Amino acid sequence: MPVTDAAVTIVGGGVHGTHLAIRLLAAGVCERDQLRIIEPTGLLETLRRQCQQCGMEAFRSPLVHHIGRDPFSLREFAKKRGRTDELIPTENGGDRPTVSLFFDHAEWVTGKHALRALLEPTRATAIVEDGDQLQVETQAGVHTTQWCLLAVGHRQLNRPEWVEGLPSTAAVNHVWDREFEPDAVDQSASVGIVGGGITAAKLAAELTQPGRKVRLFARSPFQINLREASIDWMHFSRVVDRLHELPPASQERAEAVAAARYNGSIPSHVFDRLRAAVETDQLTLHQTEVVEATDAGGTVVITCGDGTAHCLDQIVCATGFDSPYEGSLFRQLRNAGWQTGYRNAPVLDDETLRWRRDDGSLSNIVVSGAAAQQVLGPFARNIIGARQAGDWVVDLLETRSMEPTKQQQS
Image 1 (spheres, helix red, strand yellow):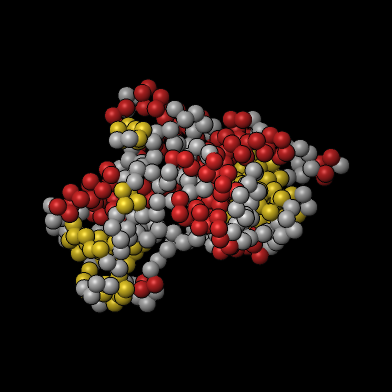
Image 2 (image 1 turned 180 degrees about the vertical axis):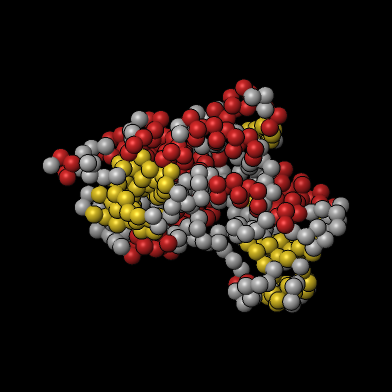
C-alpha cells in the first residue's frame, strides 16, 4: 500500500486548479492515479455561475487566455467547429471569446484529460504536516499527499458597512451570493446597483429593460482600460523582478501591486453599453456613495453622500471580494505555523510559490491565484497568473516532487 493517497493534491477547481492539473498531466510529472482535485462545486462551476450572475456575454481577456496548455487551442477549437464568429474583435487587443465558446472549449479540454474522474466533490477544511507528508482534512475524510497546491481563490465577499444593520429579510444581495439570480428580478422593480467596477457596469446593463428602473451608484468616475493592469505584468518582465526586490509579504509589495492594478477599470466595450443605457434613459448613474440603508418592509431606503435618498425594491452590491488571505484554510494555516506578513499575506518563495514555515524553511504547500499576488503581481488572480504559476509548479515538481520520501525509501 502506498504511503500517500496522492503525490499532488490540488485544493480548488477553478481556473487555477484546473489549469494546474492539466499542466501536471501534460508534462508527465504526475501520474493520474497520484493526482487529486478537491472542489465541492465542480470544475469551473463557480466561474460559470458568476458569468451568468453578472450578465457576462464575452470575456475581457484575449482568446489565448484559457485553461488549456496551448495558447492557440481555443482559436483552433473555434475554427474546426465553425464558431469564429464567437471571437469578438477588440480595438488594440486580441479577439475575445464569448462565454459560451470559452466554457465549451474548457469542457473539451477537461474531457481530453478526464479531469472529472480526479475530482473529490468535497471541501478542504485543514492542511496539517505529518512528517514529510501533508494531511488534507476534508468534509468527507482525511487524505495524505506529498504536495498540496492551494488554488482556492477569493472566498470572502466584500459587503458595505451599511448592510450590516439590515435584517436578513431585507431585499439586499451581493451579486456573487449563490442565491442571487438576475433573471428572478421583477420586471417592474426599482433596482439599485452599488459598485464602480466592471461587474457593476455589466450587471447594470444586463438588468436594464423597459419597465424596470435601474440606478447605478458609483463613488468615482469609471476608468477605461482594456486590461486590469499594464501588459508588462503579463510578460513577467523587469516589473516582476522589481517587485521581488521588495521584502516578501510586506506592505511595500502590497502597495506596489495595488498601484499596478487598475482597480475599478472597465474596457471600452462595456462602457459603451453602459453609456447607451444612460443616454436612452434606461439607466440612471449616480456618482455618489451609499452611506446608510433602512429596511422599509419590502423596500429599502438608502441615503447617499450627496444628500439624496432613494426607495428601492432591490439592491445588488457589486462590491467585489475581501482580502484573499482571509479564507478558512488560510486562517487555519497561519495559526498552524506557516509564515505570514502584512495583512496576513502568506510569505511565499519568489521562485516556486512555496509557503514558508515560521522558521523560514520551505513547506510543500504551493499557493496560486489571488493569494500569490505579492509574487506574481496584479494578474495573479487571472488566467495569465495561472499560466505563470503552472510554469513554476511544473519546474518545481519535475526536480523535487517525485523524489521518494524518507518513509518510502525505508
